[in-house]
Amino acid sequence: MSHPRSDPLRVGVIGTGAMGRDHIATLDRYVARARVTAVHDRATELADKVAAPVGARVLATPDALIDAEDVDAVLVCSPDPTHLELVLHCLEAGVPVLCEKPLAVTADGTAQVVAAETALAQRRGGGRLVQVGFMRRYDPAYVELKRDVHDGSQGDPVLLHCVHRNPSNHTGMTPEQVVGNAMVHELDIARWLLEDEVVSVSTRTVRRGGTWQPGDPVVAWLDTAAGALVEVEVFVNAGYGYDVRCEAVGSTGRSALPDLVGPDFQTRFADAYRLELQQWTEAVLAGEPTGPSAWDGHRATVVATACVESLRTGRPVEVPTEPRPALYA
Picture 1: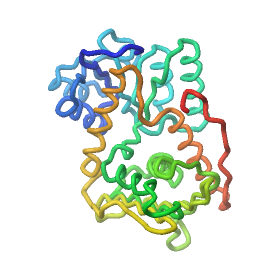
Picture 2 (picture 1 turned 90 degrees about the vertical axis):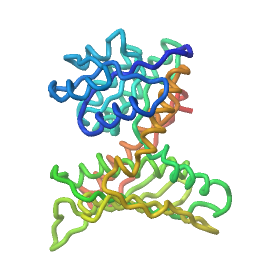
Picture 3 (picture 1 turned 45 degrees about the vertical axis):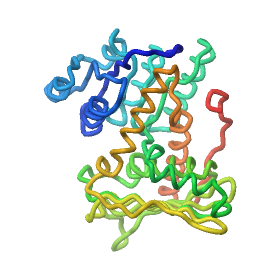
Picture 4 (picture 1 turned 45 degrees about the horizontal axis):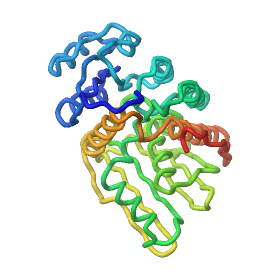
């Protein structure tokens, strides 16, 4: 979409699991100038149930939804392995897309998205079409924390302590999946908060009785180009609640998120999701997404890949450096 619009943004949603249902409800209830017009899920009965209250129609395939005449932009909330193909189709169709993290399950996949979007922009003379669902960047507490980090009140960034705990997880996630599906939020937020790149990582698991127990913590240490150290703990089976913490320690001071423990991530980040969808809607209507980019999604996955390699080898791993394409400057 290259020209600003005044009419509502017609949104198609692919995937009606917990994330898709929440996004549909948020768009319908809270997001001005947005309307859900089409929904797709392989579970057609569930799609029918979700689409009916918002007056959306159910389409049989993702391709039909992306190509539909009454869809101006697409939300991808389907399982992680489907993201790459769906985002590439959106790019081929010239349709703006907000894709839940991860952008793809491999760094090669995210690189394909960056290359495709860059080539499309060069060919058509336009801008970005892809935004990645790193909603924490919209959370008011994180926004205030970033302001503290950069307003000079605490000196230069020295340490960033990040904690990400879920009450329970019943999917049998491996340590590698914990990194790619959960820790990726911290890998993005570290880059965003510090405005710096991660250059090396070291990752390990907690080994109770000498072995990793499913759901136990995975811990990573990230070194940034400017010399700050980021410590990340992800514990997907903490039991007591959903708990996300972040403390930024500078050379002359510190600041942190408020201590908030809730039942789940939807409750903790309800405001962030609402603000994310509202700002995405306004940006797309204005002509171009402005939130977390395909480049951000790619770099988070590159760092996650290095973390997984460190898990495998038990050694620190350097994170490959890459030139940032001009599209994402």
